Amino acid sequence: MNLLKRLFSRHPQPQSTPSPFIRWPGQSGQEYQYEIHPIDTAFKALPGNFIYAQQSEDGSWIPIYIAQTRDLHQRLEGHVSADDAIANGATHVHVHYSTTGQAARCTEERDLILRWKPVCNDAIEG
Image: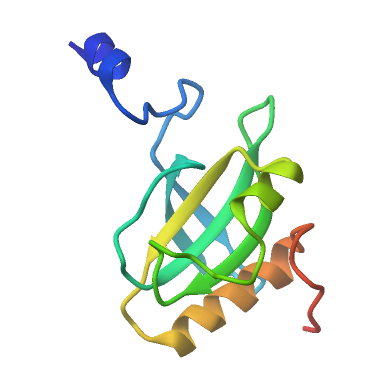
């Protein structure tokens, strides 16, 4: 049944991803749980944070771009697009729905950018 589900699923999960979730640690030591999705996944119109990420050959993840948005369905207009992220190596998008407000999303975004320094994010001061 699992094989049939994968064959006929619109967006099958990558075979090399053992879990649909990952915990991204920030500079502060705080960890944030994200869902792993194919890069072309459509999301609910809810606020949250997202990471365009590349899965390396050893299965580890490399963040390409980290951001927050009030609407994951539209992501951030005028910022790094999925095409830009793909051009820089992104293979997936990781999402963290967050209804705790923009300040919390911005804190999480900053914490992760400071720790990971993704190639598509502008450098920020700690």
